[in-house]
Length: 472
Image (cartoon, rainbow, N blue to C red):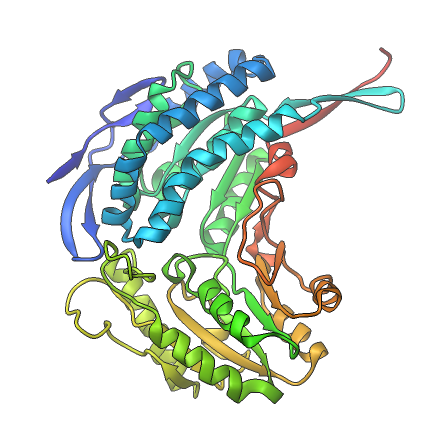
């Protein structure tokens, strides 16, 4: 039975001051696999103090020194790739294909940060002034359970590239991943205090980080409700805040789309990360004139999706992360039926052949209107809604009729038309006939999907403050 009893502060593994234990489960079997001892607010304060001390020196390091550290961190995470892959599968339930991507992403983000850092001008002339971009200070980095290792590494890589120090509050539900990543990062030989990793509850450790006057910036990925609380709590100390929050992404299928190519992309976008993704394309907007054709193809595609054992190569949808999340998704499926949506595939309960594991039947609704609960709220599971529209203007109106604006997908054989529609969609990223990721491009949301951006130059600048120097 796994017992995780240490956090990482000031360059050392230490026993937390906190004594609460949190149980860890394998979501594919529902078996308890161990527990983690949680840090408390006192631990957070000690970690913040360590990061504050380290900032005095680390903020003055050269670009070359920071690149060298980022490279060592990349190499160290790669060296633990096999163990991290197993942790992602056992602790989170990621299918083999998704787990492989998640594991490689956790190391590649350091190379992405290096590429951005090499070309970035920290000093430039603007008129008669010299403008210097300087690190913002100690950063609080709060990561979610749906891609814990990747978010730890991605946020930390950017902070280090900027010359900031960090206190990281990872999800307590992902403690095994955190342990492996922390050990790898320790092996990279960063100066003590440059990064500190304190596993604890959001309302305890996270709250202490947000309230601290010694933390200059918070980067949070998670729910919109918690993000709003961070903004309110951080206002007293004028925190710089980057938030990547919820989404209800539309997949807009234009009437000229090639359905043979579009249907697999639309289903994959919706079931990305077993549906436990803020970018999931859970609303599929289909022209009414071609609705029946799309429904038939989408029904067949969803019914072919395998929800099952994460270790099985055929599985593309793994279990929900917890019993609570499984019940939440089941509730949305019932709500969809109660509100009059028509079930095309899936439904309540586990897939055939399974009596244990927090597995959800891949589910597809049609006859959905944009005012239904399943079209308004983020489900965070493999549940898709087909919404019919009358014309292009109607499609754009429906796509934008949401409090969210993180990502959108457009499917069309006419590139100029797709670009025209993309220009009118309120979302931080719009993908046309693709599911690709570009680490040089900013990522973040409009409206209640967040504020600020991550990745690339704009992501780096979120950790920097511009200082104008005149007269020299």
